Amino acid sequence: MSERRRQTRAGERAGERKLLLANPRGFCAGVERAIAAVETALVHHGAPVYVRRHIVHNQGVVDRLKARGAVFVTELAEVPEGAVAILSAHGVAQSVLREARQRQLKTLDTTCPLVARVHAQVLDHYQAGRHVLLIGHQGHPEIIGTLGQVPGGAISVVGSPGDVDGLPLARNIAVSYAVQTTFAMQEATSVIEAIRARFDDVVAPRASDICYASSNRQEAIGAIAARADHVVVVGDRLSSNARRLVEVSRAAGCGDAQLVDGPDALDLGRIAAARVVGLTAAASAPPEAIDAVVARLVALGFAAEELPGRAENAVFKPVSMTPLDAVPLAMRGDQVRRDVERCLEQVLIPGPGAPARLNDAMRYAVLGGGKRLRALLTVLVAEMLGAEYRHAIWAACAIECLHAQSLVHDDLPCMDDDDFRRGKPSLHRAFDEATAVLAGDALLALSFEMLSDERAHPDAAVRTRLVSALARTIGKDGLALGQMMDLYPAEDASAEAVALCEQLKTGTLLSYCVEAATLLAGCEGEERERLMRFSEKLGLAFQIRDDILDRVGSAEALGKRVGKDSRAGRVTTIEIFGLEGAKRQSQRLAEACLEDLAQFGSRADRLREIASFAVSRLH
Ligand code: GRG
Image (tube, helix red, strand yellow):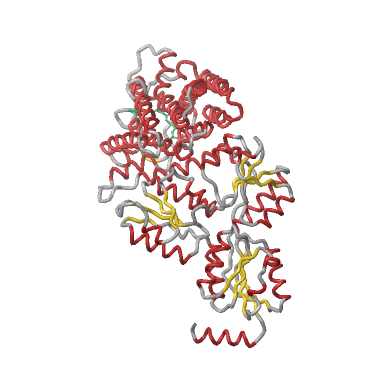
């Protein structure tokens, strides 16, 4: 013990008994947000609402919410179909979200935004081909949730430097690490050091994964514990961050520390001889429990003293009361666009030492633009059928690469000769024609490479079907043929020939989105047939709308030149049926889409929205 500390302790022993109150302590923004979500849901949706597992690790909080009408369950199977199900702040595996969707629950997700950030990073690293080392406590709900973001085996959980040394992994594999948000800072540091010593290629999180609340509470009690005879941590035994505060206190030099959930749990014998007691509280400990423990200690003769600490001003957006599956299509589209963008960013990282031009051109073509309608369609059908979201996003990215390729080649002077696309110069304008040809080729190759990768689906037979179906979609009887018919139309183009050309040129890729989703979900038979019929009509309706927009749309909204079809003398549905006739035709197709979806009930509501978007869109 240092001289200064010895003197301080002596001074404190001479005076009255002190209770040093650590700051910050108690609720964090993520816990407040999760509890408020249950309270608001009880008002908004009415009791009962079902909460999967402890909303936060505190029995007092759980009991209070139970008294107000919340029903706590262990698994979603216990929740009646169609009821409100609230997922805890610790986050859940993707399989839980899938189950919620399958059972048509009205799901509210209170996952702490800082945990959600870790989920997103883990997925990024997995998609970039890295093995993830997750520093945390095996079996904790947060770890189970994070593990469930990627396939089994893609993550190893390590809790100590010894765990790292024992990993059956080669030194030269690419790894990244992530940390449980409530882990102890010092322990994490030693595990990270072991990771850096054990592997050559290590990517760290962009910022510390340990959340601000855990770090601040650990730092504050660590400083007090050094001069306290005893530390009291208010919290629940189940709470990881509470237990870390006990460990940190001991590691900081305090001889004894106890974890209590309220005043009655205090072991007074262990405090009897203490002159200086430090007190902190877990991020899930409610204020009334903390106040009651402080009051009991003050009644025992301790003089309470608030110590200064870091100010906390984190505020999270409240949990939306709109169930996950009922968020507007536009918002769902935003999420898919974001996830597609992130995934493609990972896939298109330039190779080390390779000249950047080709990769730059591919990025120019595929990143940061487009409605991502094909991606959204793939994801929505996959979700409706119960496929995994990450597989759907991966396949959706492959499809977006292929789509970008077709746009790049379509814009070339030897094809449609367009110098503007997605609101910026076409690729051959921004680079040059040879680069545009090669970037298109490389995007085409990439789409197949992605579909044959395990990240598309763990079952090789499914991957083979994904690949061969795409080959059929774009080849001599698909996209390429449609483009050929467009470039070299028959002299006497009939309505059927025009419809076939439009169907092949545009509809086939939209159909492939649906087909890919059925393959990912293992959907066969009548359901699959109905969905494929829906996709064919959707594809044709979408292309007819494209023709209409080329005639009457705005170049600004579309991000491409308009009026090209008539200038090029192309025969489209408009030339056959007139503008109004084409509009009626696309409307009829959208209505027929709804008939194909009738059997799916409310599960297909999103697809109905897509059909109506396809024929009313302005861009
Ligand atoms: C793939 C082998 C192979 C050959 C390609 C060049 C070509 C042959 C085909 C061209 C197909 C093509 C570009 C059809 C037009 C489809 C269409 C309406 C595109 C516009 O789609 P949007 O509006 O675009 O969804 P964004 O930019 O929003 O993604």
